[in-house]
Amino acid sequence: MKNLQPSFYESDAFGRTNYNVNLNKENLLKYLIMFVVVSSATLVIPTCGVLRSHAIMVGLLASTTYSIIDMTYPNNVYINEFHH
Image (cartoon, rainbow, N blue to C red):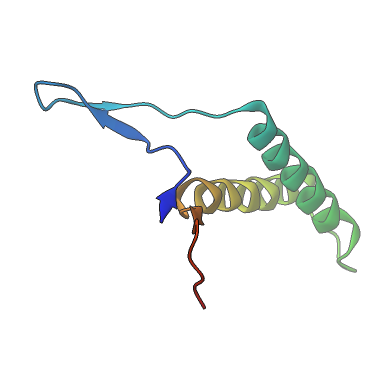
């Protein structure tokens, strides 16, 4: 089993931990699309009036949650093995 997703931290020769968050443009585009879709849906779908600031907060919450799950959930690929 290979873990194809890069780790968020690396240790150097002295045991110090260097935290690096790497965002590529493709992932950033996914998070931006998620923010726009959720924010616009929050403004359009409810029958009662929703404030624009509340819709933006809901969009930020959804896109942040999506980005955290996307970054931390491992992407495992099984090579030459079959798993159920």
